[in-house]
Structure formats: C-alpha cells, structure tokens
Amino acid sequence: MTRTLDDRALRLFVILAAFFCVNAVLAEFIGVKIFALEDTLGIAPLEWNLFGQSGSLSFTAGTLLWPVVFLMTDVINEFYGRRGVRLISWLAAGLIVYGFLFAFAAISLAPAGWWVKAAQAQGVADYQAAFAAVFGQGLWTIAGSLVAFILGQLIDVAVFHRIRDATGEKHVWLRATGSTAVSQLVDSFVVLYIAFVLGPQHWPTSLFLAVSTVNYGYKMLAAVAMIPLLYMMRRAITGYLGERRAEQLRLEAAQ
Image (cartoon, rainbow, N blue to C red):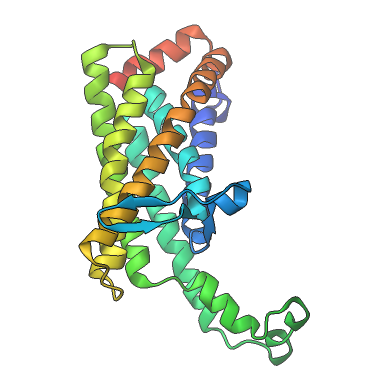
C-alpha cells in the first residue's frame, strides 16, 4: 500500500505550489524597490517614447520573480489543470494578504530606542522610518497588485486550456506564451490603473498607458525567454513521474 506522501505526483504538486507561492509573496514585498535596468547592465539609457511620455527602463524588483511565477503557472497548468492553478492562485493571494497584515502589525509595534539608531553607521538615520517605508506599501498598491494577480491567473488558466483544447498536446510553447500574453496584458494595466490612476497619485492617461506598455513588453520578453526552460521542466517532470503517470496527469489536466 502506497503512503500518501510517497505519491510522486502529490509531492511534485506540493513542491511546485510552494515555489509558486514564495515567489509570488517575495515579488510583492521586494516590488517596493525600483531599479534602473540600463544602469544595472552597465549600458547607455534606452529612452522610450510612448503616448507623449518618455523615460528610461525602470522596473520594480518584483519583475525579477514574476517570470518564475509565469513558468510555475504553465507547468502546473500542464500537469494539474484548472483546479491546480486556481488552488495555488487563491493560496498565494491569501499568503500575500497574510504577509502584509503582519508587516503592518510589525510597523505598529513600538521600536526599542537603541534599535532606531542602530544602523546610523550604514547611513540609516531612523531604522523605524526605513522599516515602515520598505514594508508599509500603500493600500492602493497592495489592492492593485492583488486584484491584478487574481485576474491574471484566472485569465491565464482559461486561455491556456482554450488553446490546449484547440491544439491538443502539440505546441506547448503556444499555450504557455499565448496565455501569458493575454493574462499579463490585463495584469500590467490593471495593477497600475488601480495603484496610480485611481490611487492618490492620479497619473494622467498618457503616463499610465506608457508605463503599462513598457512593463507589458518586459513581461512578454521574459515569457518568451522562459520557453526553453518550460520544455526542460516538462521533460524533467516526465522523467521523475514516469511516462505513464505523466501522461495520466496531462490527460486529467486537460479535462
């Protein structure tokens, strides 16, 4: 008799779900930092000009992790289907809320007097203010991220399986990239609209469209770059599960 946790398919789902969730939560928390891509790569600024707006390639640090979330979504879609993706998406959203609740709780705790000045040697005059600035993201930003994340995931799974129904088991790259193209189009615009148009900054439409388009372009380039890794993971998972078990999971996922 096989014990529950000896089932390789179950253990694989737990591992994929854990990696998906930790990347989603981390992306939200490190997303407060904006970095300059050109300076990071040591190249000359690539000035974009869209909708009457111009600027350099600046992104949130969370964009480093979102391509991994896309990859995990595609892999789970492939082997565990709609139910698997919806389960991990709602779980990740719950963990993000949980994380922010405790971040705000930690901010509200009265700091020890000595701790406030503990990092002055590193150039941090007030540790409490720095902690609050990093972890106390605005509620509009948090709301925008959560709504965009859930919408994006639900759209991704719907488009993924619509393409799968049309093409069968062929063209893994098409259903992975196609679903990301549609879901991230929604995600990229919704998060910025809620956070910066509806939010207190009230961005003009031109700035909103320009920044959203640049962010969407980055996500699509990342999604295309991840295609070889998707095939590698698919092959590795099939080897881990065995051809018969992997085929069974893919058939169940397609239903």
